[in-house]
Image 1: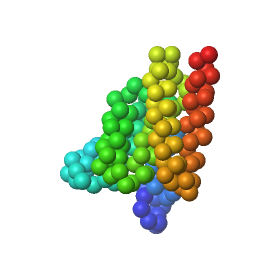
Image 2: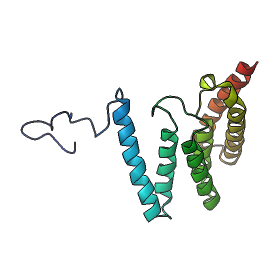
Image 3: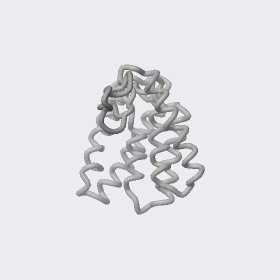
Image 4: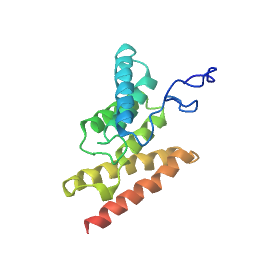
Length: 168
C-alpha cells in the first residue's frame, strides 16, 4: 500500500503500515513473496549481468530459499545455498577491493544453528564454519575499525564451539 488510505480506507485486507510484506505467521505468503522476488532478481541479473547490487540481492535471495520453510534453519546441503555462496565468491573475485562481499560470504557460510544439524552434516558444517572464520579473521586484520566485520567473528566462534562440543 503506497501513500495514505483513500476516503474509504486501505484496500480490503491491507493495512496502511503493511508495506506489502506478507504476515510473518503466514509461511505460504512469505514463500510466494520470496519466489516472486527471486524470479525478478534472476531476470534482472540476466539483463544486467554487470550490476553487482542485483547479484548481491540474488545471492541473499538464494540464502533465504535455502531455508526449507523460508524462515527456519538453513539446509547446508541446499543447492540454493551453494548457488548463493558461489555467486558471492564471484563478486569477491571480481571486486577484491570491496570487503563487504567477503563479509557476505562469511555470513552465508556461518548462517546455521549447529544444534539443528543432522549427524551427516557435521563435517560439512565444520568446514563451512572454519572457512567463514578464516574470511572473518582476514577482514578484521585488514579492517580493524570496521565494527560490522569484528562483530560477526564471535558469532562464528560460538557456532564452531557449539558444533565441536556437540560432537563429543
